Length: 613
Image 1 (tube, helix red, strand yellow):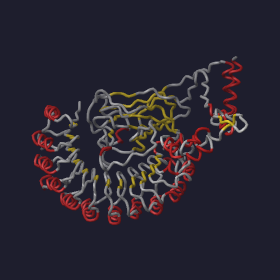
Image 2 (cartoon, helix red, strand yellow):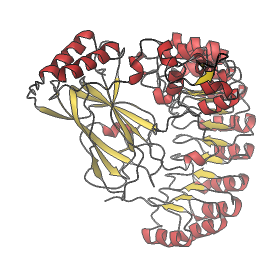
Image 3 (tube, helix red, strand yellow):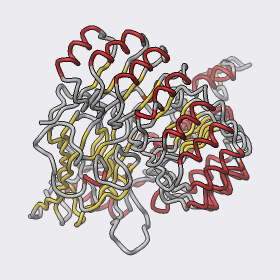
Image 4 (cartoon, one colour):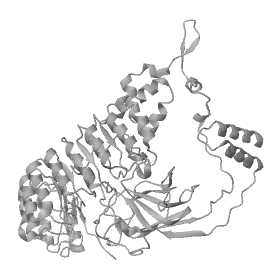
């Protein structure tokens, strides 16, 4: 019996195209036949903290300091085992579902796999490559955001260019919400991999959390010698790999129909021939992209349906960032003749996508594109943006968030996209000349994100240009702009009266004493979201003006102000019935007791008050 099973496994391995080599299969056969156990090598476990933060998608902090930045994840813990809101930790830009509910949020892409939950990521380099045995993450505030941990075969500190880069998932899970915001040491059971690594990637989803998650440090444990399995584990066999030909597979289980001589004959495509074309298309629209590509290999009829361009009007490749290459784009190119929305965010790192592959696809399929998501695409360079400007004349939405390696000169090409309505330039190196050129030639812009764009020298000039050229502006993110003054703000709100969202968080040059915030409230009656984070000068008169003039207000962040009292906040809550988020963390006049009283009076409002221990 053992010999028969061994031969069956051997035949399966021989026919399985994606399995190991013939020599490996024969070795595995001998291991099964002999039933011998391998000897586990003795190896000392290495424990190491992250040496360097290599890449990340967003952070709460600025580009010129260490407070709340991802760079705090390098080295030993700064805060743990303490809990609370500490500046020495790593904090992502957003949390909860508030951002998804804003007018500036992009529409979700169809076909996103149910198992893809990631919203942000960070990549960490460690000193020594090891075979991982454990990963430990020190979460010090509102834990539960981590949804995936991956390891990479490439050594980020090697001088050699990356070749055959592989990513393996060590652990994955769904978004969770911890019972308490207290600190914890998160160490999930990880999968064993067959290559050493000193590059880890953490992916997070903070949508279920009540406040910003904070990470303090990461430990990678592992051994330098490759561990041997006690008994060779036979790889799982996919039954579809056992067929010798496509014809053989297409005949299996096919339904019959009576022939003219009374004998049973096979139909060409079974009952699928009786279904309307549109119904089959509707069924296939619920499949993920890999499933659609696999189904296309089953028979000619389904191949025709799976390659129909109507199945590819929207294409999100972000969930497959680790596997996407020039060849992948080339394979999809013939199917995307009607492509309108394309998401390539996070793709192309370490040479996976090149200028040649990206340009070829865009030149062939960019004509009908109206939305292009390129967040954290580090393969982008100036020729890529030039191709986009030339090949995508109808483009209305462009996201270049955290493309921080793009040369400042590259952004000048965006001004050729005259139909732009949404532009995200968060954490890019765009300079003042380029943004002024874009605003001059793209007057239809309604949503603009210039958060953490530290190379813009004078935001007053940008505000003046917006007030003149973009009067239909709906949302504007100026998070951490360092030089916007009251003059620029007043000019902005005077010209852009349609604004519904305005983020002025961590803009230290704005002073309440000039009356700029009261003028903002009077001139923006449609305002729904206002972030005045860390402006110490906000006072009761500003809050009362918002209560009187902005009844549609839904989100308000006044974290860090010292001059606002609970009395003015109560007036605001009474006057703004649609308010759902109010952040009063570190507001010295609003203590925990006042927050509890306001929360009991207005239970539909999430009033945030962070703490430290």
